[in-house]
Amino acid sequence: MGHSAAVWDFRAATEMTKDQNGVSQVVLRTPQGASARVSLNGAQVTSWRNEQGEELLFTSSKTTPKAQKAARGGIPICFPQFGNCGSMELHGFARNRMWVIDENPPPLPANDSSGKSFVDLLLKSSEEDMKCWPHSFEFRLRVSLTTNGDITLISRVRNINGKPFSFSFAYHTYLLVSDISEIRIEGLETLDYLDNLSQKERFTEQGDAITFESEVDRVYLSSPNIIAVLDHERKQTYIIKKEGLPDVAVWNPWEKKSKSMTDFGDEEYKQMLCVDAAVIETPVNLRPGEEWTGRLQLSIVPSSFCGDRLGLDRSVL
Ligand code: BG6
Image 1 (tube, rainbow, N blue to C red):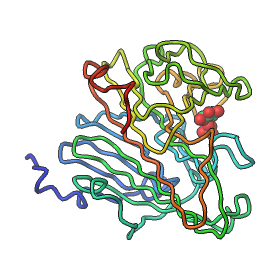
Image 2 (image 1 turned 90 degrees about the vertical axis):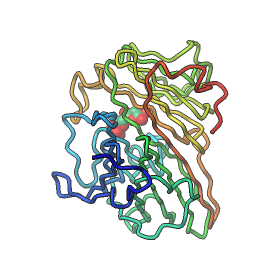
Image 3 (image 1 turned 90 degrees about the horizontal axis):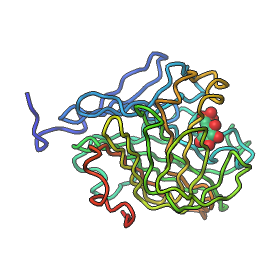
Image 4 (image 1 turned 180 degrees about the vertical axis):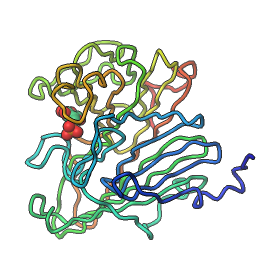
């Protein structure tokens, strides 16, 4: 029984359920069978599946998500700090907070809503968070699934403070890959990057694509707005399109670090790669009443579709 997009009720394609820990989560579906799941714990996308029902995001088999602890996988939101570049807990507190459904979000441009199954989530500064980050904000996240199965995340951060504040941010995206040794990233070559494995020292990328044979923990700076992650074995390519997010963090813990992480299997580094659209080097500065928007769109296409047709080096959204 097929559904035509014209009669498909996208709001009805949004279902609220509970995960195994009783935490509310929202499931988005398309008429063709693609789906995504978003937990209210951290507003974390915990699953994204294509029309064949195949999972596209990595989640560790060892993860034990609970209140105050993000799942190891999916797309955690890093805010108001990425990594350890400030005084806060690693990657900020947003991923460890319970978000609420935003029933009445301020409007987004029409093409961010039409033909999509979506959910709006909201996080506001709590008294507890004000102790470590004394700024009043509203963080709105819309997660959408388009008819062709692309997932889009739109973050809007508003300063409702009397004073300016600044923050860094990342969509910490755990891509599921067939074998890390077979993966190449295109779109980051020739860029400068900060190497977290060398005290954030600045280097310039020399290769014609990024490949992996040991631990990588880098922040590529001022990147193009389209990045491709090619999975040679699966003959599939993730296309990452971003807006308002100049940097890209790339992380794979490799063998030794994997063994030191309690919520990650010793061999699981072979099946994951984090490629995070982010704002890291130059934090966002918001004056009172101002709002920042950062967009991420993930698609998966057959690798034969890539290369020139995507215009990777001319990429402006
Ligand atoms: C990456 C960082 O983005 O996230 C790494 O660059 C870090 O340094 C990794 O180890 C995982 O962080 P966490 O807090 O989820 O264990």
